[in-house]
Image (tube, rainbow, N blue to C red; front, top):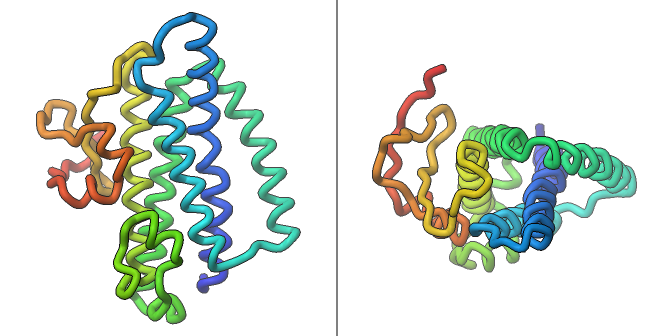
Length: 225
């Protein structure tokens, strides 16, 4: 895959990844209105996830403007996925969050492969490409030194945050209070140790996924099935 292929893949991926958080947040919002009860902090996190994924899309859009065929594919894909995910979330929110967790794992894998290709010299154009200005502003990167690799690392860190949060949302009851909850972000191939007391605050992860992922030491524990 060359740079153009990777841009296409990232753009399509982010148009899909931005749907679940908005759908889940809408369902939680409407449920809160119907039941006249507080949401326990879920809505904020879900909508923030959707906004974060949408920002990823615009980073890559600065580098490629999709043609009419791609836009049609994206529109049709969104219609199908939105309908299916809406129905699924009504039936089983826990299943949906688990599904999104695995979807985000695939996103982490995708960006990891992209970074590996960049480091291996298979994406020569990106080796000397500055990070898009929107990404530089969003992540607070150095506008003089930030390269495409820095942006990919930042986006991957966000995806790792969404992965761990959605798996966590699937594990806890729907009425669970998450405003002060803490989880741990782990690297691909590892999982959270549920008995580990050192975790990163959930709101910190969502507010600044990259900083939280970098500033907190993550104990790596192999996945066992």
